[in-house]
Length: 117
Image (tube, helix red, strand yellow):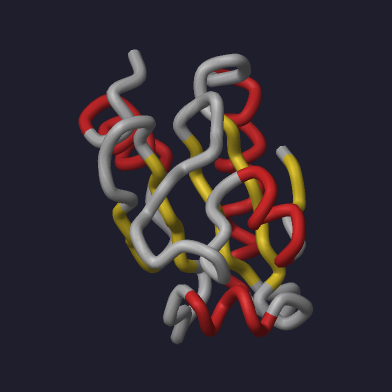
């Protein structure tokens, strides 16, 4: 799991300053967790994301963005509550979900949205 800043997000995911149309730069489907250190549900979600990062290593990249430190990035994506999760398939538009989702739901989203078995 990798922590992204505004700059690394623009390099690895999408440069929202230069492009208005979504253009994913990643080599694998991705999940981005927009979180805050003070957020209880975010803390509950962290071990689930750790497990998923191991289970889907080499198939899905999982990133974290601290919304308190990266306010510009959080604002660019309209993050109003945490945790917020951005699911990015390779050849489709990203989808956002909010809340601490159970691992079973992540597995379904990874299969159905990210198209990863």
